[in-house]
Amino acid sequence: MLATIITVKTALWLVASGASIVIGDLAPFATADVRETLRPYFAGVIDAQDQRAKAYSEEHEQAENAARTEIEFIQRRLVSRTQLFDALGDFNQLKKTHWPELPSQLRSWLIDEISGLLIQLELDKSMRLPPGLRQTVKRLFTVR
Image (cartoon, rainbow, N blue to C red; front, side, top):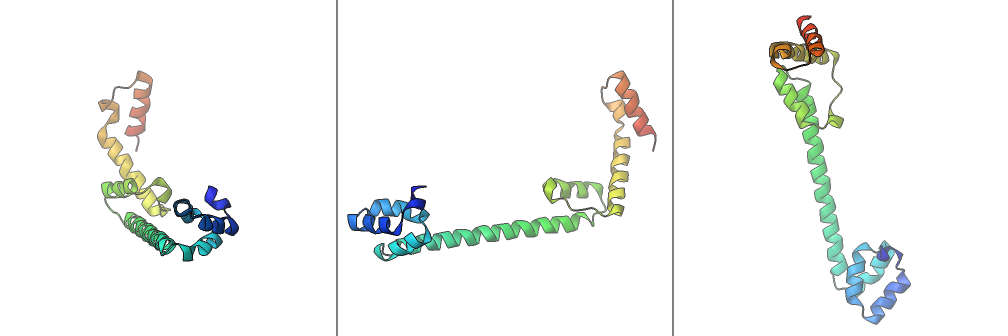
């Protein structure tokens, strides 16, 4: 925070005062003009900081690109699925915010597959439900 308010004049004063430790601590966070003023006084330290920052930025960008590529791959794979559990696995791998818009045919297929699975599970028989809810569940799964 302090580094962002240091001026070129203050930086030169710190150099003249021999406050190299303070400058070393502040330099990574200083404004560009202050960093350029300090660069010749710190035998490669600021250059090394800049190189590390650039490398970090490139690594971060590569990681983001890899994640984006993976998301796009899973989205493409999802819309071509023909097995329910494969499609559910793809949904599980993606955050909800990355779920693709589903074509109506795929949407209908998913609804039919999940409905069929719920009927096979016979929830009205396998779950302990209050009597009123039991009847509702039974009606839902006996009408197709």
